[in-house]
Length: 137
Image (cartoon, rainbow, N blue to C red; front, side, top):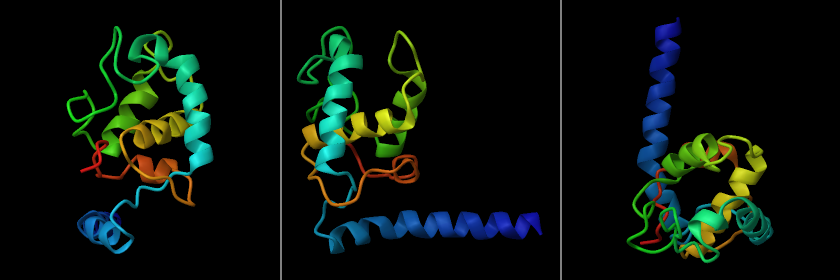
């Protein structure tokens, strides 16, 4: 019974990952869901918790840049970045921000990397599974 459930879960996960690019294209190409208010909150949270190392404009100071085609995270997936920042950042107090704070910071990073805000907020379930890259193609 457990093996059958695991197979169904793996098949559904594989299918959703396979169809995600087509869903993005049908939605106008940039379907990473986050809202402008979420990104605005993220900008404030970023300024307080991240800017001293990553720079006010995300260009890097003592830590890597988070914006641009050559940034440390440009080709990483949304899921990879969310997992890393929610467990390893801020450097002086890893994992201490709330889930909502990490999501808003990630929305702000997406916005600064060219993604457009929409009507749905970025959720933990999307952030932890989305394979889209941070840098908009």
